[in-house]
Amino acid sequence: MSFKFPSFNLQSLQESLAKVDMESISKSFQSSGKAVSEYSEHLKESIQPLTSKTQSLISAQLQQVQQLASTHSDTNIEVSDLPEDYLILEKNCDLLLKLYTDLIQYTNSTFGTLSYDYPPGNSALNKIKDAHVGSLLSSKFNQLKNVSTPQEMENILLGTKESETVETEVVTLELPKTLYGKLSEIATKASSDFNETCEPLSFALLQISSAYVQIATARLDQDKKIMSELNHALVQILNEQFIKVTELRKRVYGARSDFDLLRSQTGEDEENEELIAKEDDLVSSIEVAVVEMRRLVRPSKNIDLLKVFVTVQRDYFEAASKSLTGLLADLDKISISDEDEE
View 1 (tube, rainbow, N blue to C red):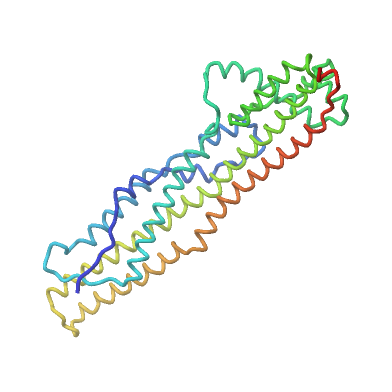
View 2: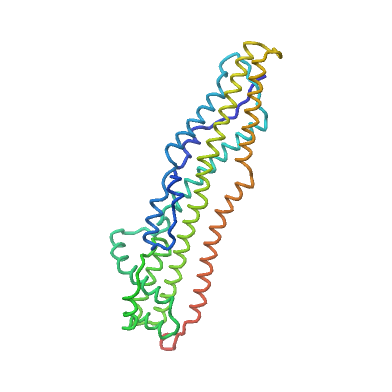
């Protein structure tokens, strides 16, 4: 008999291992009521690369599996065949490890970075602009949420004394450093520029700005959920089940190696108790590993994780669509006089 071993692409698996600090992730996003600026800093500090300890452990395990699998490859010792379903499960575990580490790496580098869609530009100039425009937008946006009459809306828009009094009572928030946060900032600045010369356009821009803040905030919520619900689960599985399964695979190849070596020394002696014990150990190791590998690659479990990812993205796009639909309806209601059109 001869063994046919699964091919292990150890280098690609090692290179694909992302880094996420599981303890930090588990403590993430506990205070949902914090200001956007605090939240963004917390997001950056909470998502750390997969601990080097875990990366080293998985890499070392895979190296040991590969070494054990080829123990007698350069000798005349006959190598026993492993069951086909076992080999298929091993291959699927390796593929799943690649999928998990890719997901962790790319969701981490995207959704773990607050400004991944923030427009590029002169950072020094943007800081100067943000200091004023961010405060202006946050103040007006908070006031607009509480208006009940057209007159109140006009007071906020035109910057009357009444609105100035209200502004002193509003706690300003930092604009989210996102694409829609930036677009909101642009619209707010333009609204302020037009508030004395073109009231309808100024009002429209302010409504656009307010809706875009909602979309920017919804994007932050999406990112938070992806990191805390998806990535956290992936890292847990990587740190617990993958390590356990790889250890069981090591035992299988170790037991196989011991059995084949003893068989080469004793021959096919069916009455040899030591050989029978080694064979039983090999069979038992395979059975235990198969149970755990099936549990790891179970389709329903992994599809549920993907559904978490898709659901969070769907919720964000639905929230954005709702905000934009409402915005279009509000823009259609803006009254434009003949004088404005001249």
